[in-house]
Length: 334
Image 1 (tube, rainbow, N blue to C red):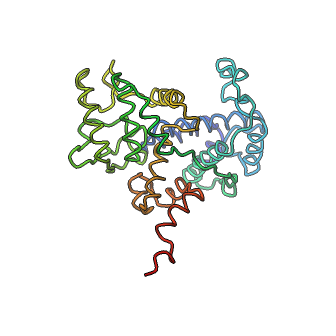
Image 2 (image 1 turned 90 degrees about the vertical axis):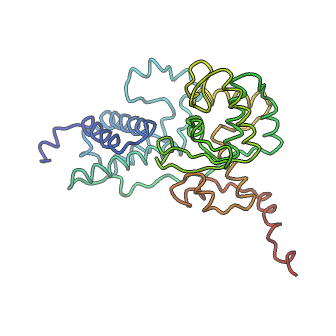
Image 3 (image 1 turned 30 degrees about the vertical axis):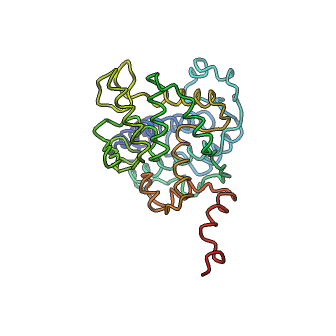
């Protein structure tokens, strides 16, 4: 593209082109939404704060100014569109103007980097302002872990004569036993499960990396699944494993997350545990039982072992002491 033609095209044009590119790569709607939100916010900020109308004008210093502004202005104080300020009523939020987390800022940086990498490749001769921009250092907090007694307390709190609770108890059991993501679990059909071999073949179209994989479950989970399937089939005919009673379609992630929070409160478990944390619990339990990281990485569906190591090695001193007992050299002398 010639320089004059390129200069006529504003941020909006290039954002649309980038999103078309992302769509052509079949990226998840959630990923596309994250990219668009980040880029629309940045577009408005550059216009209002720096007088910039095109990615061609963005420099490294522009990015650094933006990061500083993110650190200083607080949550919900800036929107991609002004009218959102009125409809979302940010001043009514409890966390209005509280600091934006480093995790969130780093997500913005990653998204901007992806955009400008594409821009540099698509339009040779342009300079990439993100080349010297690094992620902010972020002290990682260990995830909350559910002890065996808490898992039993949660599962014992369900009324399994009630369709949604019987379904949700089975989902929780299966994620704890297989390490699936919540979205993967809720999308399963009956045909994806082999109860005899105790294997689930997760279809590629529902996995995060769009690669199908196998996960496994225990005899206890197999019995729970058999009970649930018999229960479900009395009320509704559907190919999906975890449907709603009203529609026969899979229960939505948001609905399950809301239900899960209510179950935790009802069981009196005061921990920051989400449905995704059940997957974290699975990973930690496997490590504590002696599973190697490579096998765990394959089961979890991570792109590399390093992803598993960064995300799931939340072992406390007590955990290490427990694992050490299986390996201590002097004790094992013969």
